[in-house]
Image (cartoon, rainbow, N blue to C red; front, side, top):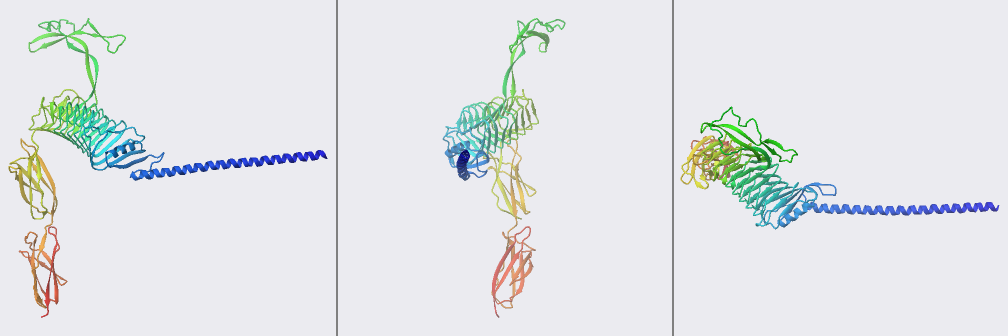
Length: 640
């Protein structure tokens, strides 16, 4: 019995122990669960805070951003647009761009005049590689102290409507480009480089469009632009005026570049030692080769008469030359001395000449694949040679350009070319001879060379043109503001031609009658002569309908039932009668048709049918040549 009680007691204690363990385990699990829940809540709070922070940042960014989505950690937006109101802000915005996360960063600079205070640098960004500056015709002055901006490799800069003046640097007075540079609708003036590229030095891709380069200078090459080993350069529809380089290329120098296109530009009064406007120079590498030169020991003429049967050593050589420029283990043995035979026509003698083979230096040329097309070159100057263009080897096409009064002080040529082809060019009153043709693969074709003076036709302001009236057409023929007298101007208007002669002041005038309604092209042209170039001017003239006028003769007070004649005259504004024209006469609400006679007079008889105020109106509805018009009047009627 005792044993059974002991066993029961043991089982009971064991059960209690187990229950306590389960409870403790349950409490432990519950504590862990609470701890995990607390941690999860903390993470959620952090996430919410991060989201709020992101939203605040994006709201701040969106104050400046106009395009592109808000920036997040993993999302790269397309374009960010912001503004700058002065040079410091421009610099600050560029520094912000370096830390931004956009494909393109655009800065709109407020229009104004600003002085540069430092050189800007577009490089070392976190992600953004393209910078756009829309300057809204702002003028930035380098004060002769700074370069405007440097663009690093693999970076892109686009400049729109900016004026950069008086910047200085060793290379690229205003801009040094090692990446991709685009300049549009801008002005670069009076910038200076100690060496190359008075305004722009480009060691990368370059596009320049609709811009002006004036008064820039370089201590060596490229008075305005220096293009160095570029693979893509496009210079289109720009004006280059009075730029200067001490060495090559008064406006542009191209060195060792590929695929350069210079089209539809105007080059005026640029100056350099060689290539007053453009110099095209390839990159060269030297190499050594074995070449022959004449070698004289004693008398060159070894015999008075050459004996063809005698062996002078032409077929056999005993002396060799060890040629080993590359450090080969065994030198190459080549003949060092030999003989050549010849015939001297001056002295009617045959002779033999001894020669020797020696190491010589040659050159391989790379780059300078250039097209120069449809440009105008006017009064450019070279102090040495190549007044307009210097070509020093390279594959160059010079086509459909116009050359006027370019000059150099050595060869008197517009183009100094070491090339081979020169075809289909036109000379009109030009002193230029053929350019020097030597080496390379240059094609100079379909260009016009003309030394005559420029002319312009200035058209005076025209009065408004109306059908059937005289239109005065007048203006002046000038050469650089100087009158060109006693010259015929041909005027074409409305399919008719007229001729007017210039006075001693260059003035001309003629009256033409406008016979049709609509828009017509007025063209004025001057054919030129041996001294002056041809020129032309044109303007679209709108011929309007003729203004008309209708009068009503005053009607005195009438009595009821009196007969009344409503009459008047229909004319142009100037008073010219308009006959056989139908008018509408309305009297007290009733309308009648009348036709004007040969004097433009109309008349309609009516009966006074109303006591009090009577109304009269006369209307011309207008037609293809004359404008509509209406006149109104009233008169009184009383009882009899």
